[in-house]
Length: 284
Image (cartoon, rainbow, N blue to C red; front, side, top):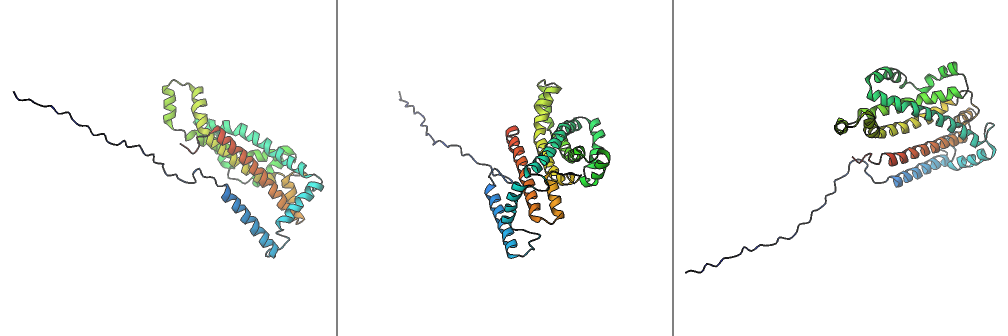
């Protein structure tokens, strides 16, 4: 008999290959902060302003130095301007802009959501909004005076009209940009209309709504000067217009700076709300 010797297969263990994570390249601005760039830009702007005014390239009547504007802030804070203190001017303007924004948000968001959900609402509201939205607020300022007088009502109404349209149209755009796949998925899971609205429609439209609110505040601050032309004795816009009549350019710069700081504070607050309420914005 012949002995048959069996051989076992020899297995060679290959080295383990670890998965290599590949980071996808970003697009656009990305997540890197731009604060340093903004600070450098501001410093360069202030330096150019001081350089031009110091050398007298522009008449001092039209362009005071930055240190003179800072000095004027202290003077207005101490002595007031046009029969009112600086705090009274700021509080009057903040009251008007906050009340107008609250009314525009309370009316504009539901109206915009309704326009995005109902063709009847869109057909009824779209025409008047698109008619007056491109008009500058100064064009219907005389109507506010004729209809509502020269009190606070006409000023706040002018601001509401200026802020309402961007909020309403942004809410409508948020609803219309909603992917149908989300709606159909929620329906397939048995969601009723209320659950569909609260869980799908409203969260999806919220980024557009907050963007519209931020734009509306910018338009509102721009309209504030026009609104405070209506027989005002208080307000930052009134202070600017009153100073311009006497060629007090440094006071005009003070008013512009205060409006810029207030607008920046409102914008920063809305950005914080965006980070809290819609943390997924720009990441999907």
